[in-house]
Length: 421
Length: 196
Image 1 (cartoon, rainbow over the protein chains, first blue to last red):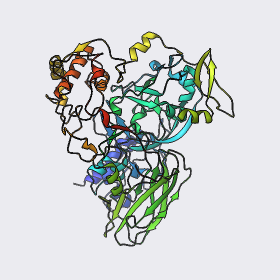
Image 2 (cartoon, each protein chain N blue to C red):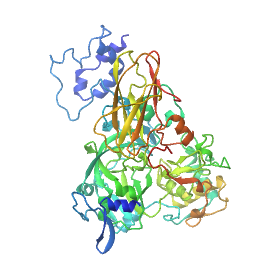
Image 3 (cartoon, rainbow over the protein chains, first blue to last red):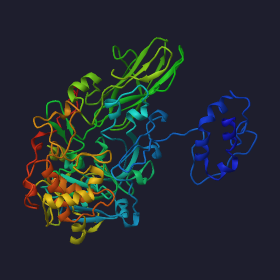
Image 4 (tube, rainbow over the protein chains, first blue to last red):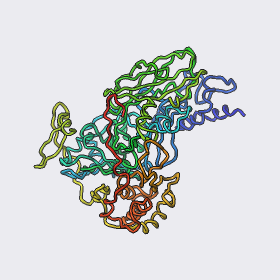
């Protein structure tokens, strides 16, 4: 049976017009390469893709733009309520993560909240305990910033159970980058009046985990935001609709979603997620606590597993670098497993606490090669080697995996994740 | 230090309504904004309804009490299906009970030992806070104070941290000394070339 042909023939123009392009594309996925390259002459082009688009009218306007059925980027949902779904880094360009592909991490599902009933309570060591509605937040002066968000457990699979067939998504897909709009915490504090005794803030979500973290007041006075928009539109529910905390450069878990309460306090609360979880046991028999800042990090997203390189052809090596301490100062690339390094180009704009795109033109000679990227931030911090990381943090460490990632190009051109390099 | 830096960055202390308040200072080119009067006063009832957190000093703990023997029933009914009958952990939820290794704190060096309440959690009050807000996941916030105190007592007893007859309440729970209490240290990473 000509499975490819029969399946692609089922993609009718009417299906696309009815707005089921995504479904149609999913059905097409397995057959597209043949259809595009024409390697199988028995296959007629899909009715949705005319042989010559200049000879037939296109589609009408629509309420929202679906992706081309030829592009099917997707996260990695598991169906679990407490868990994560990773962003397809290898399919992204530039630095902004499309909103529907931003990674997710929830602690008891995605809360659904009616914005009309939304309330943010700010109380504790304040002069005026205050309730803000969503409209109140939007009446206050807003700022717009581009920042990455990264789960501090990003990279755990590659560290604990590395395999050659890991993609950038499976290695580091718990980082994303977006434009956020909202209110500075200092703006909110002017409304409530913070008592001098306050040194921490308890932030609490309105989800079924009622997730809570203690945040040092100094972060609030620095650059913390309460955001209600992402990439120009209201937050999606998975991102904490209608409002969340955003702590630029700090581990994702502390950026409380569905934010319902801020309590100004004098001591950290020692919540579960800052004691039992999100602490870093070290080889010296201690555990690092309140390790909020995400260290400098980078990953080459192209080429990566499962790419296969052509000998002698120029190609662009590309990836992302970021640091929770500020701007990326430089990214160095190596093709010989870290023996020699050369500076990559950084695409503008290079923003603090944001993904930065780096590129480098390269021609694979045909000999085995090991590609690595190493980011340095503006404080001079740079990514350690895997050996340095293991020595300092230990095999049992649970978060903040920022060692150098490697891709091995094998003799036949296959690119695989560099386990143990 | 943070406060000084913040002041240098343009945040000023100002008097509002006779009280000392921290407020934003300069937004646009030195324009000083005190307060827009946006938002409405929170009522005591509203605050009480949401102010559920419990801290290591025991602030926030409600009235109520429980013992391990009462807690064994609560645990069997509400917790064991995910955490295992003895709190040993199942694929659905982590282990709560376990003191091994008795010596040392080797969790950074090795993955051999499972982190539990008994060998890793630094504060007993966190148990109350977390169970109260988030457990059980299918019906969070559904347990009464006595049930939570009882379940906490059972977990602490199973870990050998309290005697089985000890009553857990707002006075006794903050006094429970957890084995891993002194293992936690502040973050010493500060940027720069040295990897920590």
